[in-house]
Length: 189
Image (cartoon, helix red, strand yellow):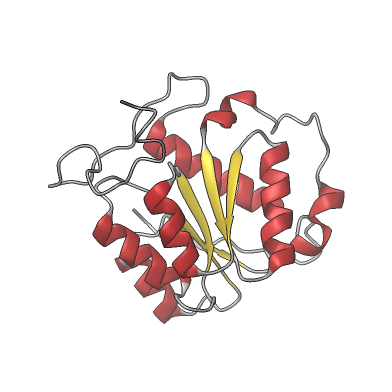
């Protein structure tokens, strides 16, 4: 999947610091069909993580939060996550390290969007190698985040309103994820 850096024009509304004022309930972006998607928001900055999570919830997404890369990997292994929105610079595991670990352990496509204030050519190269869907510069722009997430979800899972589809298996791997533990094994019997 290609890496697409998104530029943030000066004076563009929607940076994390003013995301809440840029958000207007009832706007066309509020699509109930998005409720079928779970997005993991991983950022060591609690304010950024909670703001992004709250705005995505208001847009109809289910969100799960992680404070570092290791926690992000643990959550994806026990919860059905459709997309990871992850910060690059975090303790324990960086965003790229977490994405690479997920690529090695999951048997399905999991789109990942990387956020960073340091979008160097080397980081872009590494993100491309890790099959990151997109790299978004920080401070993030709300419109860019929403557009990128929807585009990634649509590419992997289909258009909003379509019947939900299971995650696509990775090429060369069997469908399903036998390594994914079930949350409610006892109730499934």
